[in-house]
Amino acid sequence: MDNRIPLFLFGLAVFCALIRGFLPKGKGIAAILAEACTAAGVLTGLAAGMDLQALGTPLLAVCAAALMGLVMPERGGSAP
Image (cartoon, rainbow, N blue to C red; front, side, top):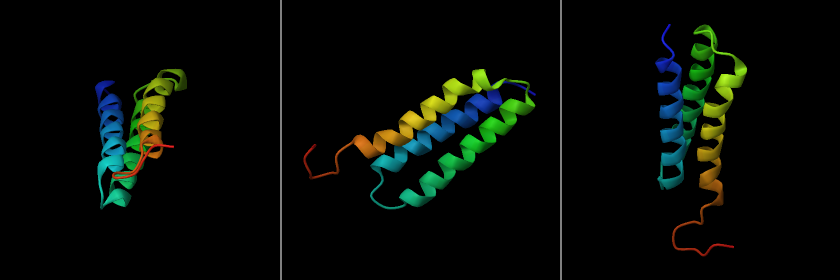
């Protein structure tokens, strides 16, 4: 199996996690897509022979993108 497939899935998960923070509606489906792509990326990475240390960096990128929506202020509000 090619190592580009898990990285593509992680990239898609980062995109879905980032888009979740900017959508006024439909946040739930974007979060579910991000979680599904992350799980698929981990499983295909393990099937491709990647170790957990190699999968740590893409997982950290997905977590950072998901947390970005929590630290950004709401539209029309002020930052704490």
